[in-house]
Length: 212
Image 1 (cartoon, helix red, strand yellow):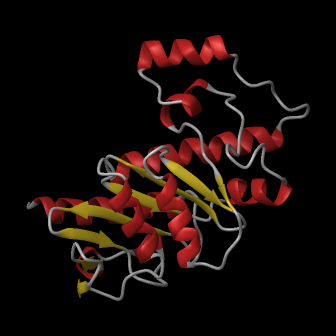
Image 2 (cartoon, rainbow, N blue to C red):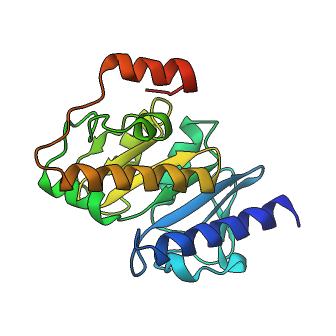
C-alpha cells in the first residue's frame, strides 16, 4: 500500500467514525491530509460516513484541483492552515453539536472558547479561539484561521463548529473529540467548574510537554 493509499483509507475511516458517533450529520464537515505533492480533501456536499477513497479530491501544492470529485468549498481554509503550520498533516472540520451550542450560548472568552477544566483538554487541545460568524467557505474566515494556525491547533467557527489540525488526520480527530467532550461537560455543569490552577497547568507542561 502506498503512503497516499494509506492516507486515503485513513480519511475514510475517520470520516465514518465521526459520522457514526454523531460528530457530524448529513453532508456536513470535511477532512483533508497533506501529501508530498499537494493534499487530499473530501469532496463538496458528501457525507463523511460514506466516503470513497478513490473519489477524494486531490489538489496540487498551488491548490489546483487535479483529480477526484470536486473539492470541498472550504479548500481555502485547509490550504491556509497547511501553509501557516508546516507540522500540520491532517485537518478535520465538523459541525459538532455541543461546540455549535457553545457558540450559541456564549463562549468563555473570544481568545479561548472554554476554560481549562480537564488535563486532557490542556494536553491534547490547548487554547481554541472563536472565529466570528461568516458564511461557510468565506475566505475572510479562512484567513483569520490561517493567521492563528502557527500558535494554536484549532479554532471554533461561530454557529458552524470546530476545525482542528494535527500531525495526522487521526490525531486531528482525537483532538476534536476531546474538544467536543469538554464543551459537553461545560454546558452540562451547573454551577460551572473552576478552571485548573496555573500550578496544575504548569505541571502538565513540565510532565507531558503540554502546549498551553
